[in-house]
Amino acid sequence: MSGSNEQTWATTAMRTDLCGALRRDDVGRTVSVCGWVQSRREHGEHLAFIDLRDHTGVVQCVVDGAHDLRSEYVLRITGTVRPRPEGTDNPNLPTGEVEVGDCTVEVLSRAEPPPFPIDGRGDVDEQHRLRHRYVDLRSERMQRNLRLRARVNHAIRNAMDAQGFVEVETPMLIASTPEGARDFVVPSRLSPGAFYALPQSPQLFKQLCMVGGVDRYYQIARCLRDEDLRADRQFEFAQLDAEASFVSQADVQAFISEAVAAATEAVTGERPTVFPSMTWLEAMERFGSDKPDTRFGMELVELTERFSATEFNAFKAPCVKGICVPGGGDKTRKQLDDLTEQAKRWGAKGLVWMRVGAGGELTSPVAKFLSEGELAGIVEATGAAEGDLVLIVADERPRVRHVLGLLRLELGRPPVTEGGLQFLWVVDFPLFEALDEAGLPIPAHHPFTMPHDEDVALLDTGDPQDLLTVRSQAYDLVCNGWELGSGSVRIHRPDVQARIFALLGISDEEANAKFGFLLEAFRYGAPPHAGFAFGIDRLVALLAGEENIREVIAFPKTQSGQDPLTKAPTAIDARHLTELGLRVLPKVD
Image (cartoon, rainbow, N blue to C red; front, top):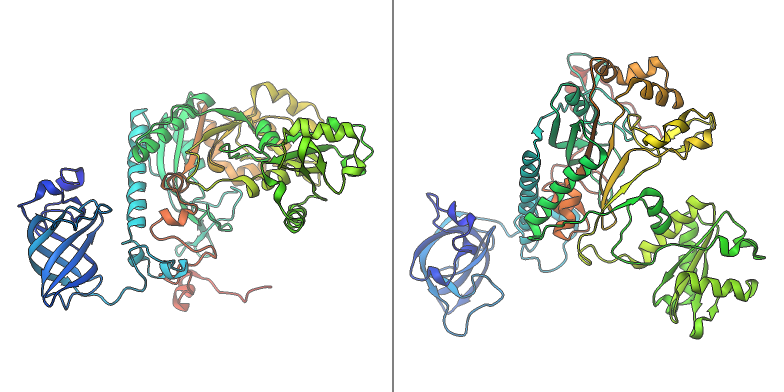
């Protein structure tokens, strides 16, 4: 709008004002505006209304002799701001009370008809949009999202600077390190047969910054991981990466909460003040997920004890849990059969459904196998009422939680724009997620995560099952069912690190081969330190109300990893392969 921050830098040699900034206060002024032709409407034999668009919006210009002006032509229009004729105001347009008249027009660039409408009307195939992304970027939606993203980055930097963090850039060409996902690799011309890796994260380098006395580091880092793509994942992504010395887990959570709150306020105008915490175990038991969407109910209900003496064989299992679907009792038998098949695809042996009738009476194919006390117990435990649907899974506890957690999201999760932003810290993750075939523990995070102080003794009991109860000082920030990021207190003590490596079956030789430069650095005085990283793409998508992070990235890849615009990935010229000492082998099926 007139007088806005954008308007203060609008004046250049070519324009005096931005299209979307003109208001009734500007009436009588002579202005020059530049932009693209959004639409042209003929008015009589000679006059035409041109809606001129730039990133701030559109303004109506009354032009004489506009027959040669076409959609997406780039124009410079000079004229006088005047009120629209009585009865022609457009209340849906910020500039709808005024127009630019007595216009002179300069065509700065002619344009072919665009490959799809830019005004947002009608659905356009995403592949088509990405093929012509430079046109798609002109849309109001993409302009809003990219500028929203810029505000988020600015707010994050300000928040981190204000907390004493120093922005340090780390290398993009590094040695390959085991981080869980596959590396993108770059062949070295100067060292034939050797390769760099592109960073999956700056993890090791930011820990080296702590050894180097930086004290508080941050970076808006570009990271790359060769993993399967989906709505919230791309090969290349941006994250706020942070590390601090002489801090606790609570300190890091406070730092990150401040940055996220500042970013949220920069977009919404409202600052979240509460970032509640929940243990990993509670999240799994109540929501069946370590990234719970807490905007709605349908929590998992424990039923195991209620069936401890059951005669129903299907419920003679280590764990029995259920969820209540409000109003779900009207689902057809086919819909219920489809849910059962879906549960089986997710790993369940079966799914028991029960409709709730008048007086809490349960209707189900298995009702006849359950006692009156067991049926009444289901209603009592789930809080089910008439018209509701109860779904029950019995199996090993991890599988029960997993399947019911997915069913909960399938049946109850609201659109991303509903219910506001509900941030949540999930803490006390297991240090190890399982045992492998050799009985060795599998780390749930990277092998530099500090065990919970109270659980360190469990590392030395000799019982592998005790290892699965060890809690780590790891923590995630989630919002509306999306994992925004992860962090942990790092191991800085050589004795604890050696014990973890030994438990994982990592020999001294292997540890030195994989992490030698970090372990060597720790010999020269490593301070206690902890850190965190969260995905900026995901945070921006949530703030923009987008279900897919591709809508907040200027030039994303498709779900198959292709770039329709540049046609990447492409073959490399044979001369370049020879120069790099490479040969492409036939694909092995």
